[in-house]
Image 1 (cartoon, helix red, strand yellow):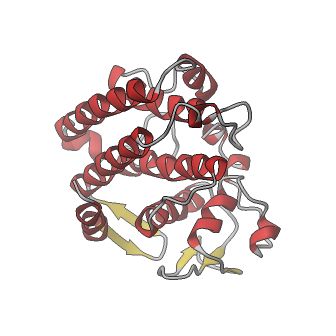
Image 2 (cartoon, one colour):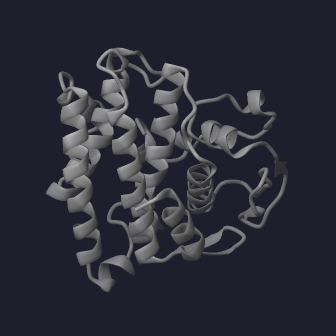
Length: 244
């Protein structure tokens, strides 16, 4: 799947009314599979030395970040997601090389697409087990959001910039849904190049670029550094996100 195809699928799949964003199962699957394919190609372009560089994720090198993401999709396919904390996932791949990660991500991505497309409507139309108020499609899209923020972690460590605008937009839209689910105080999101999102009816305006908004919302940047007066770090509202 090309980036253009993924972007088109994303635009087709989003049906939004302010913060009430519904995700179509076929488009969600296409987005997540496409982003894992992109990430696999990104990893393939890294060097062995790159894997040992320290990132802003506490205690994680680039290898640890990739290990966490690899472990996440492996655990999903094994039906054991949630059993291994992120740190344990990262540690499990502590000696892996770029070719090993590339091969594992390629195989896991192929299996993930088959798995997601095989799930019955009853699953897709239901909630995420253990996550109050989150619909299944939004839960699946968490994977694309994690690929966004962790690719940014690696970019920051290596002094690169590889994330396309479409992936920042996917992450912003996912976050808008999460802010509503987590019952944040009302506020309005007006980011450059994106539609407005009124969180829980809307209120004080948050205006910045999408990348900095995502970084603030995931604890990777202080709110003040992005000109935001609100505490938007989702880690403070949902411990499930710790380590993401």
